[in-house]
Every structure is written in structure tokens, then in C-alpha cells.
Image (cartoon, rainbow, N blue to C red; front, side, top):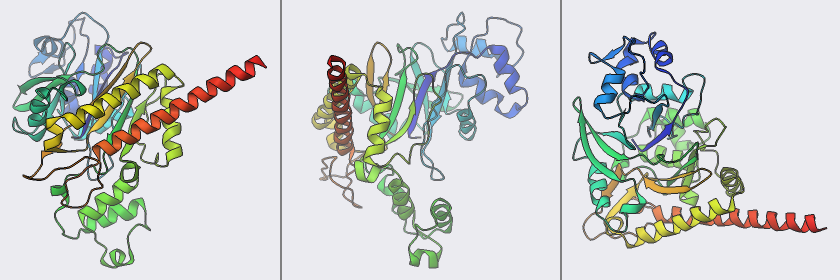
Length: 384
């Protein structure tokens, strides 16, 4: 799991959700556990492990006297498709299309109250658990990542409890930016076996992508496929890609791999910030502080950080920027040092994290300058 985004969603009642579950008994347990819903009336009869949804959530500390529902969604990077976060639309009249993507990853998210979210991990010794433990005690890194609350076990599953980064925001705009030249770890692509399935996936996307030799063999390595997939986006050139975006009052955009050129990226970011110069300045200030913190952090000196995302959120009152997702934050081999900016080659452990930060900051500075020029030209036209 490489990215998890949690958005507040209003408009779902207990009865409406129950009705939506009746046709699919197999998803009832997983879905109920992934929704925090109001159960003001006690006449419901759907149970989770012999308890009603309200009783389950009350046990977890959730308030039971509010009609506003918290809807959680996850983003999972799979080999079969490029990663794209599930950004859920507020006030949706029906279950969002993105919700269906969760069916392949049951029980990945469990509800928690009071500004806490739970993310499933394979075990208490998982790389992401170890990363968050170290990040939480790193004086330079601890304030730029979600607060690590601790571990939790629920029905045999292990979860990390993290700060809900959207707590305190009202109907915010959200952007997820994957940073780095690559989103795969080196051990994922160390196998040089030729695979027909990956060749078929490649030609299903771009029949002209394989070389003549690859066409003849009808097979490619996993590394070849992963590099092909990264090259579809701006990751290899820019050191980052815009993964998804949710604007207030608009449907979420969850697959943005075609936003690749410099012009397209700048236009997308400009649309996201919507001409708000103070918002852009706050984002730049925060990103520069995070960049400095990474350069000073002992954790980042000792780890390669692959597949992490810059999470940006703002509303009418404040701006938030964090670095999230550390499932592929792996300790560096002994005597290996990286600067997080050098281009990756197999074996050097570089991932381009800081290169991506540099480029995101540069794009925001360009957008800010464009906004300032537009404002200046507007004042001159008004004086005429």
C-alpha cells in the first residue's frame, strides 16, 4: 500500500448505507468497518460480529450523536495499474465509483475516532512501522509527517494509528504528489526472469513500446516494465508526478499520469491553487522547510525513501503540507550514502526524493510569478 488518503464525506445516512449493502452480503462486514456512520435510530438490524455498526463504532470511541459521516478511502499501488489515490467526492448522491476499487483490498482501513486513522500493515515489524517509529523521534522529521500514534490490533489484523491530516479542514482542496524518480524498490526488480504477462500489459497500453527484440521474445523483465510505467508520467524526468487532485465542488481526478509536460504540470498546479497567492506562498514556505529538514534528518541520511507522497491540503483558512507513506522506506546498506537528488541506477539506492522537492517548489514559484504578473497587468488595465 503506497498511499492512503482520508476524506470527510457528508450525506450518508445509516439507512441509506444499509440499503446499499443488502445486495452484496459478502462486502457487508468490510464496508461497515470502513464507514463511520450515524446510528441515531436503534431499529437497524445489520450487525458486524453480532454487534450493530453503532455499537462497534462506540466501542472504538466514535461519537454517536452526530449525523456527519467520515468516509475513508485508500490508494494502493499495484503492478497491474499505475497508482491513483481514491479521492472521494463530498455530498455524493450515491456510492462513488472509487469505492469499488476498495473491494480488492478488504479491511485495509479501520475506523478510529478523534482525528486518528488506522492503516493496515502486514506485521508489527513491517518497514512502515519501523519508519514511523524512527521518524517520530527524529527532531527534524517528526513535524513534517503524520503523527504516529502507535500500533493497534483488530481481529487479528495489525494497524498503525496515524494523525488524520484532514482534521480541522472544512471542504478542502487536496493534491497528492508522488515524489522520486521511481516508485519501486530495487529488490522488487532484481529478478531478471522474462515475463510474458508484463509484455502483454505493456502492449495493451502502448503497442509500440517494446523493442524489436522484445516483440520477438514476447516477454520483458519486471524492471523493464516498471521503468516503462514510470516513464508514462513525469516521474523520471521531473522527479515527481501529480497523482490525484480533488477540488471543492468538483469531481475528483484520480488518474493523472498524462500530466507529464512542464506546461501541463504548471497549468494543473495553477488550477489547483486557483490564483490564491497567499496559499501558494504558504505552500512554498512549508515545502522549503521540509526540504531543509530532510537534508538535516538522520532518518533520511540512513534510508532510501521510495514511493512517498507530498500531501497538500488547503481551505479558506489554512494550508497543510506533509510527507506521507513510508512502506518502502528502507535502511541503506552499510557504507552507502545518498543525496536524494542523483539519478537512479541499479545499485546506487538513489530515489530522487529531494530532486522532486526541488522541482515541486520550482513549479509553485513559477505559478506564483504568473499570478503576480496577472495581478499587475490587471491593475495597469484598470488604471487605463
